[in-house]
Length: 251
Image (cartoon, rainbow, N blue to C red; front, top):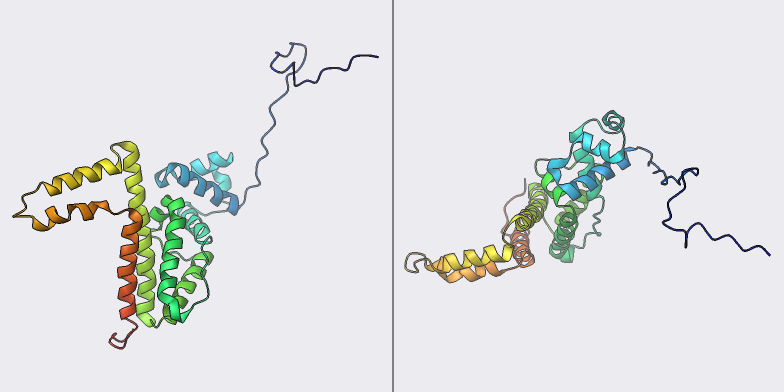
């Protein structure tokens, strides 16, 4: 009986192909059909990996292996791409049905969930400044947040301003944290810089700077999470005052 032929892979793996045989070609990459969704996916991946400053229509098209002109069949320009990318991320948020008895805690839960989401996409937090989130997902999110605020007793202008205030607080916290992380990667660690600041303030003349020398430790020893929760308590605590009998008329 004839001996079975050895498999191509196995003992022969790594042996050069003889010149009279055609070497096996690398599998050809299957291009994903171009659509608005794939364009937004590519833009989100690009800014997440390389930062918002690196986002251009050409770089997105290079990532998708298409000509830049092919993108314009799905997005009008970079501004629209930014809006679509922001709305794509907003679509990952979901809000519960309002519970009037715990509306304040629901606002905090929304803020924490938004912070956790944007922390995965810090460039999106950056791009959201100066943008009016008006995409389909954004309007659903803000309708849900306004429903919680109005269920708690805020109305009119107070609820509208409160929704913007909460969103702005979260975006600012995430963006600042990303700036710290970027600086951390380029030089001294955050811990080293905080320690330098504490040492400097503690060494100031106490008779002239009694508060700074006394509070140098607390000013720079809280984690970002502690600071975020403190600010959230202050913010929501202020909103609860607007729902009491002493609150002014809502516009």
